[in-house]
Amino acid sequence: MDGLTHLGYQRRTQLRASVQLPATFLTPQLVGGGVIQDASRTGLRIDTLEPVSVGMAFAIQVYFPQEPGPLTIDEAVVQWTNGTQFGARFTKLDDAVLPRLDTFYVLALEEQLQSLAEFLTALSAPTSALEWLRTSGRAHPSLSL
Image 1: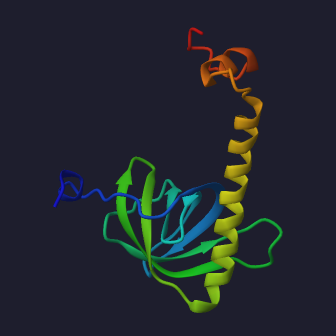
Image 2: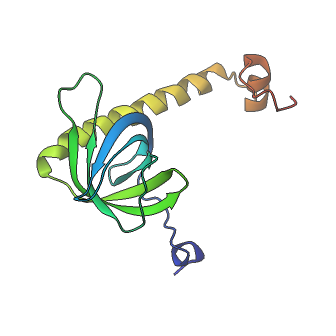
């Protein structure tokens, strides 16, 4: 067992797609809301003001823009918490939900890859990423470039 696993951390096995989607999580004692920050085929990260704890299990409803109803994940379990964020791993998924979840995931990854491709295209061969930041105006003001 390596040090990260021993401390309760595990290496990611799936790519994570950055998203901003509203979600509701439900237990018999709690109906909470939050915003999904990133997701993979096996879990997600939610920002919420609701109290959750490691090991807590709940159903999740994910709301997509321009779709009539939420995608429901039957059960997810909290793997970690940090301030207002927590990570949950899917433990029960209805097979009927998988095509919708896969479509959402692939489209989100495609959008991220398109952004990366645009960034790389903007770099000419002799231009470094540092030079691109200098000339693009996208560098954070705290950086002294």
